[in-house]
Image (tube, rainbow, N blue to C red):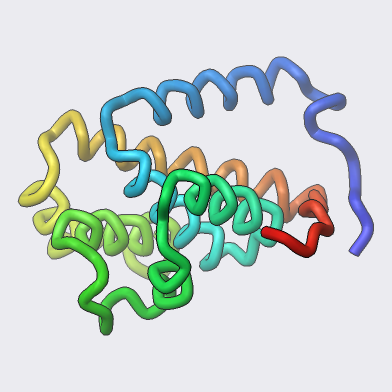
Length: 150
């Protein structure tokens, strides 16, 4: 896979705007472990190797367990995720696959049962942001580091 254009050089103002959104999301009050799970799950769905490498590495540094990453694509069948995380993962899948799901009422209601209205908006912005980052990375073929010690 060959890298295409460098979005950071081609449109630094656009990337700066995304970076500001990312800074907001990182500091909005959502748990960092939840943020990592959401970013990783969306990146799995979107097939973004660059973001998967980055977010799983960051989460490991934050103390996240390997087994929760191994089972993340099958979170519905695992007891390793809290009800709040499950609500966030359902909303992540609903919004990441929006054309197929239409953001079902069941996922919306489940989300509001576990998040305040502000947190739910922030979660939605987090999901939107990682989907944009995935599209930048996949669309322009960003290459993840080729290290052997993730």
